[in-house]
Image (tube, rainbow, N blue to C red; front, side, top):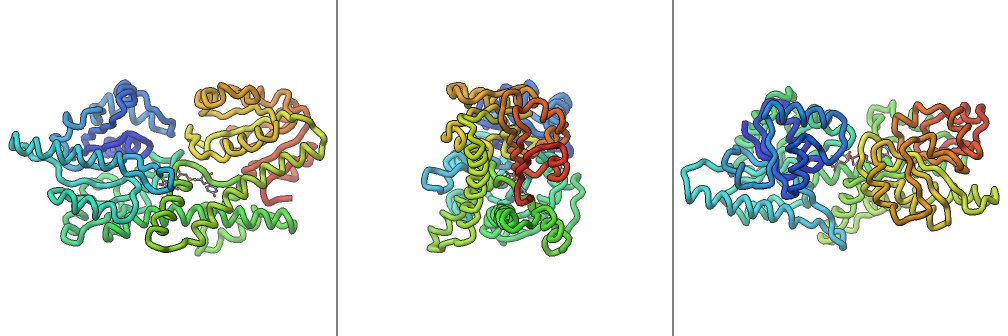
Amino acid sequence: MKILLIGAGNIGLVTALCFAEKGHQVFCVDIDQTKIGKLKSGVASIFEPELDFLLKSHLKLGNIQFSSQLESVLNQSEVIFLAIGTPNDSTGQVDLTAVDNAVADIARLCTTATNTSSAKVAKTIIIKSTAPPGTNKKFTEKYPNFKFISSPEFLREGSAIYDCLNPDRIIIGSHPEHANDDLKLFKSIYEQFEISENKFIQMDTVTSEMTKYAANIFLAARVSLMNEFSRVCERNGADIELLKKGLSLDHRIGNEFLNAGIGYGGSCFPKDLEAFNSYATGLNENLKITNAIRKTNDLQLANFGFKIVAYHKAANIQNPTICIWGATFKPDTDDLREAPALKLVALLLNRSFNLHIYDPKAEGALTDLFKDQPNVKIFKNSYEALDGTDALVIATEWNEFKSANPTEIKKHLKAPVIFDGRNIFSPPQMRELGFQYFSIGRQ
Ligand code: UGA
């Protein structure tokens, strides 16, 4: 099938490449000409495992074409996917301007095409962008000649290609009169993905839009609950990792998203919580749990930060220098958006700390970000970043850190002190090695 993806960001680019991988002819359009220029020469603007390989292979095979000109590819496409960013505005509401503009462009160009030639132009627009409930209905009313289907995306950064190729479910938010045709269309798009029948879930458009928010809020709630439990563990001597084990074997709970840490971040959870909250407020609903999730998340980071501050104060270390390992909001991505590590940096800079930061994938972005901040030094090597520092703080659980050698860490630090915000080491082992080891929800 000839598929057009509009938006070459995390979701659009990954989806485009996965469709190409599964045998479709894909056009991927983005208004960012620099991004498209790079993609044409096989350079992606994001890091994602497997992405480079797929990009280079499918460019070579000619299965994917990138363009910043919608007009040049619109008439060649049978179906259009929208994967455009939907940031929040300053009031927390979703800013749909970019999506609005893209749909308006499609409508204008399609009208011109149908008027000037007999070309059959795509009239089915599948919305992958996260958009507030009701967005599909609004578009359907405004552009009655088009069919809009809402199919939210659930892929995670860091394992986006895997998730896209192996989806847990495909949501198809349809208008009732098109439901049968839409199911057929999705089955043909996903034919080569070998997805079992029961993973195609059909529903109305509003529910499908809401499913996306509900999924992210649900997952964020689990993380916040575990973070809350971890604080109680620190007071009563219980162990959050054992608690997690005790919970996760309950099949009703399962074992995902139960890792306590320094809080969730990224471009999705914080944004979607805020957007859904603001959407519900517009419906005169005051969401107690959704609000509490965010507050718990903020508190978790602040608690961890103050633990570091209190330790150095008690040890009477003036203007401490500490090393932070990991800056991205999670491992296997170069994404720094809403990263807890960066919030920690801000908190510690406010307390006159000097910081050495090392991240396996964000060195360039961090250098740029802190170029005017004399108290922050960015390093290319994890062990060198430790030299001359009073303590190590682990903010992101990269595998590189999990497999680091504690004896080597000890050699580089001025004092053997670790604040582990992701529980990557074992407390007894660290104690045995002579570390003062502070982790989350463990003694
Ligand atoms: C999230 C959802 O998991 C995806 O399903 C969704 O498609 C995506 O948002 C989106 O809306 O586009 P993502 O933000 O890439 O994906 O990352 P997650 O793996 O969900 O992690 C989010 C945050 O929660 C990270 O900061 C992570 O460190 C934190 N987390 C996750 C924990 O602190 N503990 C856990 O047990 C799991």
